[in-house]
Image (cartoon, rainbow, N blue to C red; front, side, top):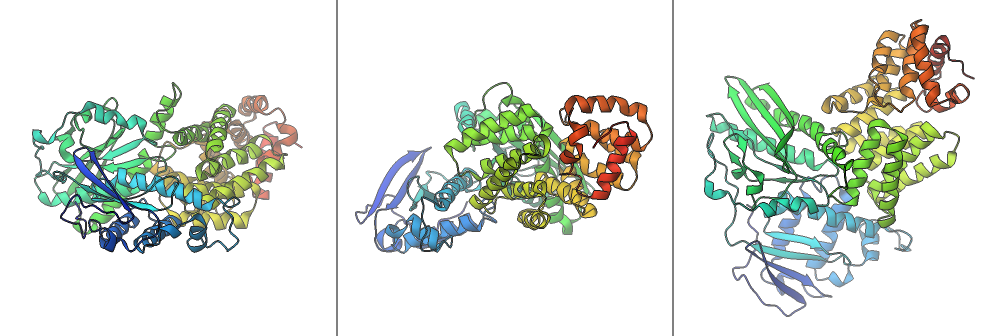
Length: 590
């Protein structure tokens, strides 16, 4: 538990100098907030219970957290409004001053034309909420910014009894007094904006107390990795949820951060081998929905590398578009409305489209996106997702309609403009540039995207796939393999890159086996890839069924085949070899 620097001893000071003091009961704690109305002197002279030093210390904690890492615009925004308030200039915090002093807009800035301040303010509020829902949940001082204002508020939480996390001795269970039955508390996850996951410190099943630091370090790495996954609220929970190796009934932990999913695990050690078991639990039913074991040779000097490696693998398996959590919620969304906010419904529908690229999932995703953009037209996520859908509409369905491509480019650029450090937005802009054939801009954007986070499996796989198809085969395939290794539940169309790599090398047998891994049933590329490989192998009889399947999907392929494949067959020599395979299979094209 961090101590708040400069905290006053008197818990209920009174002030009448421009600050409004509020007092309320929150789960047995007394909360006090200070709001500044208009212009007044520095905070430390005007209100003695919260010092400038305490506010700046809390600001440093927030800015150093994973939630704020690699977000310079958001960090600059929060630092500016906090420092202006501490300096007594809260009355001067306006959209215009933020735009010109923080975001570098010129003096002719017009908020009716450029909504950057409003957009970033909404992001800042959401990220602060996520921070305090997770690692900041036990902080003694809160920094918040209410809707309708850019002036921050500072509030101090004074617990009756500090609930400091207790790390039980190796191999021991927590005292029963630490458990608090409160079923209704746990059910609050259903009202969250996004699904939440609580990380529990790993249970040390060894007799070696030195293993505790390995468990704590891995929890930190997992926290950081999962915090980077879009659409998850992450918190670290209390080890009182355990009785030995098994998690206690989650509904008994009313004092713990509420969460829909629980990540639990244990550590075993035998001689020089250390074994980690990690499990993902659906707190609704306490059913296990994912589990994995990792075994390493234990070398103390390589502990950090070990922790980073496990965290990277676990994050890839359970987070992102194709992870265990997304798959679980995707199944639920097919049988009823989601309990989460519209933004997460967008995420779920987009994930479903990415899996099969069908017209049905396209229509559902587009419907949700249109509705989401009507309520929040500046959402970077909605803009970028819709850009991707339009890019695929152009490349897979209507390649003659350049207006669709222009719309995709405009939406993708708006998404990045709204959140420049949003890696998903940048990755999807890269894809739209890939489809549009803007090679130089594509590679420039792809490089910037990878710099933000080179380990997010969904992004790494998509970029590697695109880079390979653009001719940088070795590098692109290495990235694709890395992304696919981190999450085996990837969409089958990603196999197009290794398929074409084998094809261009004349390894048609290997290419055919890659084509067999295509699993989107509605995508014409699945039978197309098999036909071309079979044609080059001289197996024309086997290719016949594939030709019929292709023409059933795309009866216009003989006439428009070259046009609708050019987006992915970037190399003219490869395209020539590919269409020669189709010709040998009995499919004539213009």
